Length: 200
Image (tube, rainbow, N blue to C red):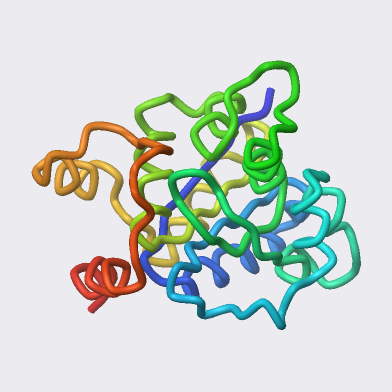
C-alpha cells in the first residue's frame, strides 16, 4: 500500500532542500508535490513555465513535470481557492488546479484539502496544511509505499519542518478552526508578518 507523507515549511528554501533530498533518495518526482504561497510575488509572471500554462487549462501538473531535471524544474504559477497565488508542481498541484478550473475528477473535493484527503491524509491534518500554505508556508508531499514511509518522514523532518501539533494549537488560539476556501486570501503584508513570527 501507499501513503502520503507531508510536511509544512516556513522557509521555501528548506522545502526545496527536502524535495531534492527526496529525489536523491530515489523517490520519483512524479510522486512528490510542492505548493508554496506566492502572495508576496516572489516569482513573477515572467517566470511562467509550461507547467503553469497547463495548470491554467486544468491539465495534470504531475504529467507536465516529467522532464529531465526533477520536480523543481516544472514549477508553475497558479491560484488555489482560499490560498491565492502559489507556485506549485506535482500531483497535489494538479488536483488543486483542477479544483480552480472546475475539472475535479470523480466528484471528489478539490483544492489542497480534497487532494490530501483523497490520498488518505486525515481531514484535520489536511485542513492544517492548507491553512499553513494560506499563511505563507510551503507544503511538500510524497506518495510512498508503507516500507519507505519512515525514511521519507525522517527526510522531511531533517529540513526544519513545522510541528503540526504546536502550530495548529497556535492557529486555534487565534480563533481558527479549519481551512475555509472562501476566506479572504492573506495579503503580502500578512504573509510577511506570519513568516516573521516563525522564521528566526
